[in-house]
Image (cartoon, rainbow, N blue to C red; front, top):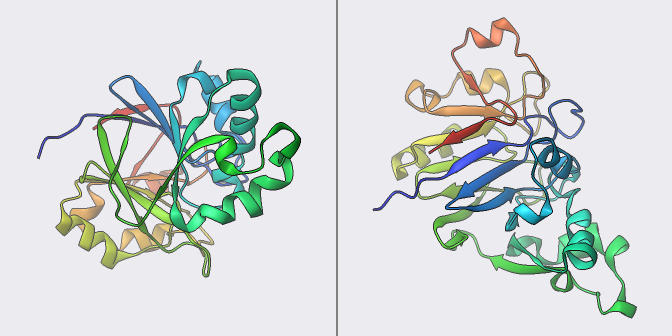
Length: 247
């Protein structure tokens, strides 16, 4: 199987309340096209910090409905409709089809007098079933799988190019990590919380993952500018905000 090279940058490595490390969102670049994984309240500010804007983004994939993952969509919708005059692609798990519009965006964006009464009036929406193949742009294949985050609420993670796992937000799941490794995943981007992890993976839980998996893991969502020495000594690899990595 041909490997499709791509780059990924964390726009933030924080949680919803982090101010200096921004929300846990990512930027992917493949063959000149750029895409966001999630679009939280700090996404556009983070892009501005690195000299990019709405005009540089070709599409957005949403993993779940929390403000640090969807809080920037209202700005994207309004900017696209009234400034850029274009609809950005929005890759959306089918489970979020009605929830995103009815529960998150409709209150601000519903404007039937101007012919804007649905999600599709603002975005070029691509609804996706679980494990349904799609591509970022014309090149980079991906699909989503359901993962556990907040009990009773939908959340998913991404498999990119059949070799790269991006958790977004999830609890620790050793069995899934082993299954993905057996499937052929070579690189894991996994969220981590140092303490009080209820709906995320804790440092202690991650430490119990098999060594052959941990050595291929990179961690996000930890939410501090400087990681304490006690955690650095663990050998875990912590992703840095606004740093590109090529895969």
